[in-house]
Length: 403
Image (cartoon, rainbow, N blue to C red; front, side, top):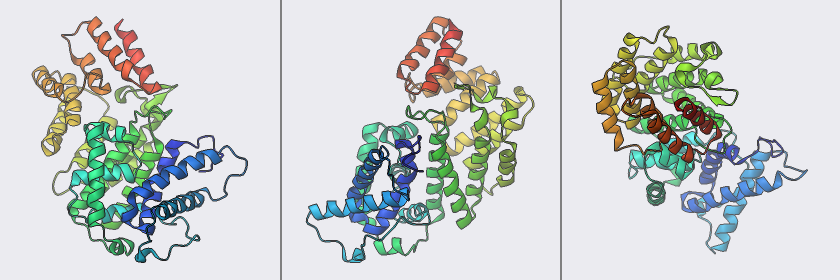
């Protein structure tokens, strides 16, 4: 990325956020965590200003790292604190790490026993992938205030449990359960990127987040060869194969209305190659099977939907997520299982707000008790809360259908 690039924006800074954070943490130590976060934001601001000039730095990524590093040093000096002896090697010559430092940090943080799995996920989403509090709240169903307060508490735990020497020496032996936590983070990041609601993104997909998630998942699989990671890669391949057909002429196209001839069949084949049945059923495997069945079937008949329902019910027993139940409800509707449909709708009522994009779309399609006027009113409510142009167009088209 170059500052003179017309796509040079805050969203592209997020691609670098985690690399800068991990590199600076390795350079300064966790005691300066808050200063590191501030320095990265300040360096991004300076980069946006310099993008207006006619003399941008040749090595932008390295320039950004040095600016952030110097900012941290200035903050430390202002606090009149001496640098830690373990970091006495600070010089102006240090440059941005050649290798991606994020996986090292991901793995190291899993060894801090005081961090729960949920806390680890929140911190990594914020500080490695640069997601906003609002985005994290959307994917975790926590309030924004709850996310913010949790992240502040997590920082204190990390400062207490961080061993600088072990981190720098890459002396990490995470448990299988903790590697699974990293898989969960990568899964969340890909999903947020694949179906972004960010109004600053002109597409329905944040390519940068998806690419980052896939790249780190490949590194994780190369290091530990876990079947779960392998199936996560399979899932990413299946989803990525559909990207060419997800939007057409500025309009969002739902899965079952997409033109299959536009799908990337080489990625579908890669997904099939990665897919491997685990010894114990795992959600990545089940979801990859569901997506592949939808993509490879010739007929979406009742048999198909009943097979998919069995898979979703299996997945729901493993995880119990309301997002799974949301998809399962749609499958009940397609399979004409109306008693189960009514039951799941009642369960979802207490979870999703009335302005939730997918929940409202589901209800307007499957809820026969609503009149056309009621459906129209609900869709207009969602439209008022929609921030992204793609989604506004999609909802507007749905409103026209009900009028």
